[in-house]
Length: 88
Length: 386
Image (cartoon, rainbow over all chains, first blue to last red; front, side, top):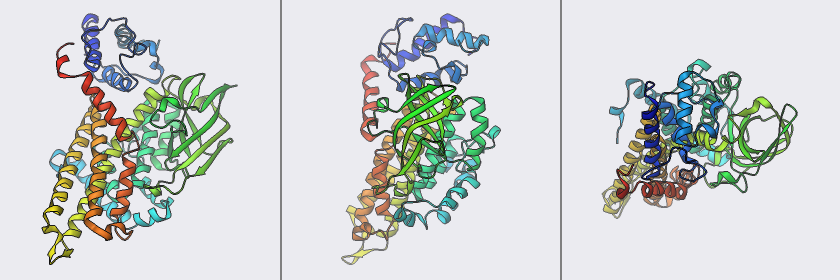
């Protein structure tokens, strides 16, 4: 999982969110929380997805909406974590 | 339905130990605890001493680090004997989960060992007079003050609150939801017992009143803005999972009692077990218990794997198990007749406890709304659209 290149990673994240919302498409920069595309119940599923499907650990210091509010944000967060960058 | 064939050897062994413990240390006393509206402190200490109460504390912090299935089996076993005792295990586990998962390293070092040993017993303080299912409506506040925080507000229906020595408290910090660890002896915290409950009467509920209650900066768990959506939600998932298994245990106890009673009781010259209408109720009990147990097992396997699907699976399991627990308890009372209305038979206690299970850790109506909402989001005509 950890070797997935960015375009595929982005696609994987987009598919997961679309799988929850049932929507046909999703812009990578769309804020999924403020646009009410997902609700707070989705947050834990997203964390579990990032940890278990994408192979990075979400620590308490990573709890920042800017890390999770769009496909682009999640992709960047996962890439940073894979490089070993701590937090934002 | 027997699920032994799905369990590992260690899980089967643990289940046998749990059953023996509940049979000797819970079942003979649970009706008295219910009448007294209290669980003896010695029992909770025993629960801790056996490694059950702090079962979820990871091994590196001195706990047994039970896997999710084994923790579920423990919840089921306690559920067969006493819903209140199971409730204490549940909320203690929820706080362990919150600290293990979202706490800082110093918080884990400070608390997990104590929670494993039972020298600290924890309570979960989310609900308020104006915020039940709508947790986002919490009005308790926290404000920064010097190097720490000051808490104000009221928390209600805190399980084991009368005796717990550590509370995970949720409050608004500058408008954002946040979680705090608050020791019982903090000045500014008053604990008021709540009596006269319908069910789970021995769970020793309390109301917590915070009035300028000062806590250090190190009390904050997780980041502000994630107290509800992450720290509370994660803990509540565990709570829901434990309650679901507890409901399976409660329903199993009702089924066993009903089979025993109707197999002996004679009316109109024949045993009740020979009456088709009684058999229908027993058949529904057997089917409901079996299905609920399998849903709980499925949720447990998904939780153990850390799969995102564990979240909806746990909602379904809790909804179904609570619904079946109540139906089973209702029919158990019916099959016992007048005897079932007497406190000489535990089915009346299970019946009252089962009603509570339909309300706590997500009411039945909330579960229905979420489950149905998911079905509509993922309706068949949208399949493949992604």
